[in-house]
Image 1 (tube, rainbow, N blue to C red):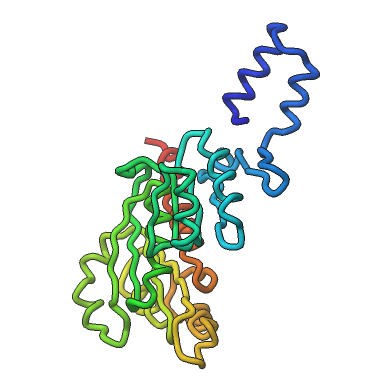
Image 2: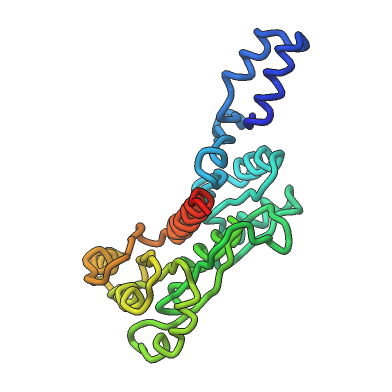
Length: 260
């Protein structure tokens, strides 16, 4: 039940149309909706945080994902599940024909087409190498599904830094940059030294043995001497997108509160 539904329920109690005991039962379930015995959907998350709950698809069965998506689709807005393999998507689509799939991002969603831009500001997605694209696309698609304008700049890692330098004009168009890199993870530090926007660094597990599954780029990013960098977990493109979105939404809030 959202705030509008709660208002309607309380008004019905005040008019004597709904018994207080019935209303109490309803109010006790405010904040979540049970789906079977395996999930409780946080229906209030959009009101609290600005973004709806997102389904972590990995390790859930296709049937569980379908049931959760069906319950969430009763409310307005995008329904999104991450870490969905092509095989799982095909099983989901057999029961939910309206589901769209973003294969490189491994995301499936029930969403309008085309996606509307609902927030001010541009998020720039930068990847070091082609192998980093699954994580970078997870970030890009997540941001787009959340209503942000996104541009992509792929395969501009420090091994051929001239590719990055020739695209500085694109970097300067972003209000927040998400920079995705594996191997030694140096790209976010370079980008942060070129722009005046916040940089969100996303380390990936791409690399030879000494990268320790992404630990080496993670430590490089945490130890960056460039300022204005925030770092999320290894392969966490989704988390990078959500942080970028919160930064831009905070800017919107501050703009509204400033006196004219």
